[in-house]
Length: 189
Image (cartoon, rainbow, N blue to C red; front, top):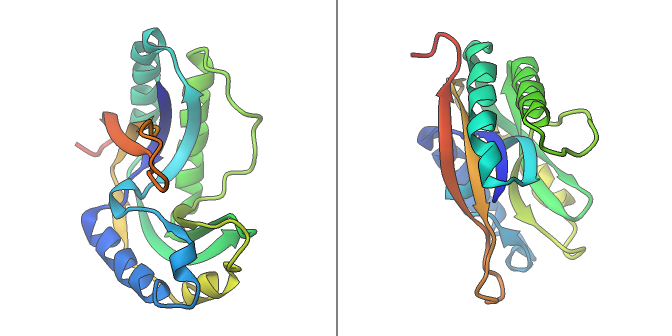
């Protein structure tokens, strides 16, 4: 199964971002982008790709420990950017260092469980809003998010998500995400 560890924004934060995204969808060329569904919005901490079922119990135990060692922290959706013309994203403000620490701990938990991970890269928190393929340029959309700032919330849990890839062959079908596990951050309940 394809898995990733993530932080999920609460519904109130998603509402604020959805309002900002709706304004972007009115820009010229927006219909050519593949907009992500709000129920799939997340900050990926560690992408594990294919994981054998037998590894999930150990991975879950290690993620639980990583969560317990991390205290809850403030975060908010803020601003945005783009990776070339491939992905438009919303950024984060608040205790981004704590988010990076949690990402590192989730990555280490996966590695210690025997999962082969990509080489370490500097963690850049982002929540993907849309995907493109060269046209239109995503710069105007990122500029449209420059002033966006959502309300702060407290990140209180680490989530393990399964990505169910499309199998129908229907053009435009997107992966479906299913929560596999949730662990409260230390002191969060």
